[in-house]
Image 1: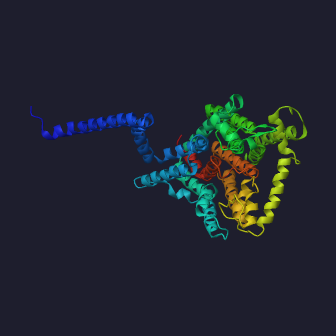
Image 2: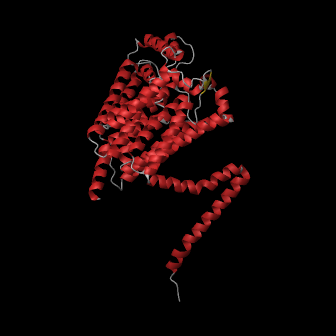
Image 3: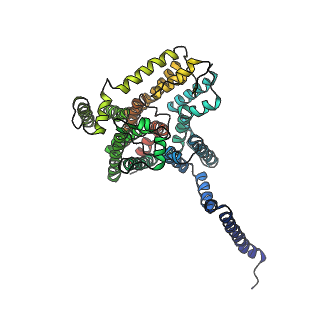
Length: 485
């Protein structure tokens, strides 16, 4: 039987090409390993997997966002071990995510209309103001502006665009919560390991050579930081996780998720305590108080208020368990005569003197590390801000700070209105209330810590806000699902 030549070509040519590529690949792997070492060999060996991963992520922008969400948690910890620019690295991932989104939108309908909401408007207006700060008479280098404006204004806008377009289903919201709970457990475990097994060589180098010991090995005890930039960032994030996950556990219907969120919330509380960050205590105190107002359930509201009052009285009016350094350090957060608090207040008085003549601030990215002809600039740069809002004040002045606070609270008030009056589904309403409660707690904590412009808190903060403004779409989806069943 005679086989047509075209059938032979179709059958054998692809196999010949495949085997030729395989032989070339093995040859490259062998040559690179022998000439350059195992490191380069491993890079060649990983190329097929990296290529497959690249195309899968390019095809599925939602997966890109999940990768972004996870890496956001670890990027600063990795930077402690491997020297690279976390900001540029995250910029590349975000750019790739947007590229995948744009490519997908060419052949599939995307929910771009969902970005048309008050949150997108407020974050965009703030970004425009920050761009106008380039006209600030104070001489700030463009690269310094670009570095500092990321967490201040650019990332918030990008996040509130990505969430509505990519996380379009209620299951996506629950999926993010599950990942968040898992990351919280990992962060708490790393803090536990540091506390009970000590710091590794790289962490010790950061403490003793990098200067971290000055703020982390103090008279009141060791402040643990897990894989975060510092204990302040770690403690606030763990408090944020505790509030959001614990309240979500009250409303989630799935019993396994309820249990998992409660365990993660307890782990978050543990991480917050061992961080030794007194400002982080504001997250649960303010967060649970706001939740009591949003719950619309008198039993839950009363329980929350009783718990808060009991905890406050225990820490503020008693000396029970004062021999425990962790409790003693938390108790100092309520001491009005605390030296650390007084130093911060004195610093703010000094800053006010310098900033009186700078209504739009010293410029985004302002930083002077050595004396020069303009002595006032040098003195201003040497005063610690010790607060996210003070940092915004220094860089954008009283005008910028006022605009920032007004726009932020405008978005939050609208978000609260959505939760109270627009969301019908109890599970969804409870989860969104948990997020808003955590947001209020983080705002309170940001007064004492520079946390809202750092990884991972910046992303978590605005992702939660974006979810709140997506609430009406999720609520409609759940209502339609209930009607069908």
